[in-house]
Amino acid sequence: MEEQLKKLKNSLHNVPDLTFSNDDKQIIKQRLEKKAVTSKRNLLLSLFQLLERPRSGTEVLTLLRARGIKNYEYNEGTLFIKLHELEQEGYLQSGWIDDVKEYQITKNGRKQLHALESKQVKEATKLHEIWER
View 1: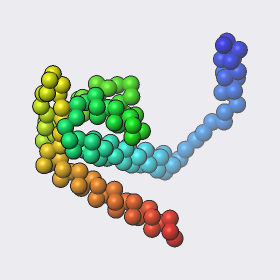
View 2: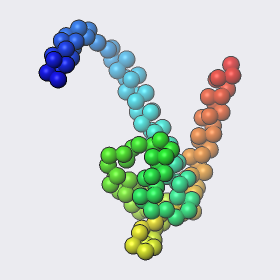
View 3: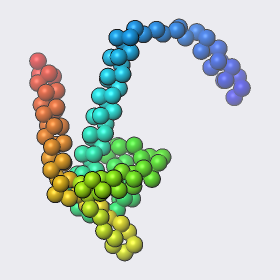
View 4: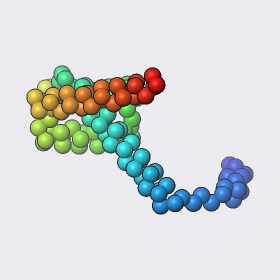
């Protein structure tokens, strides 16, 4: 193990210093921010789609993982915070059934879901058009 660490340390000396112009830094920052927004939008879209029928937070977590969404992989508690926030904003409603809290999308949440789906369709159409050129 110690030998591997020595090799890693030595290899770090061979990495050239990377310098970025301010323009490059700005472009990288914009792309990362855009990716984060897209990721959040896709997560919200998935949550709303999954909550078309009543589901527990644990069930939602399992279904998100099945979709390959791992935002809550090691911090499941943040999913419950997000569900609570969406409930407070009027996008979800909840109720208790046999000691299990279940969440479901509201009318307001459905409006948001349709807006997110429309945006996704428009983006997919643009990508398809670019691909077909």
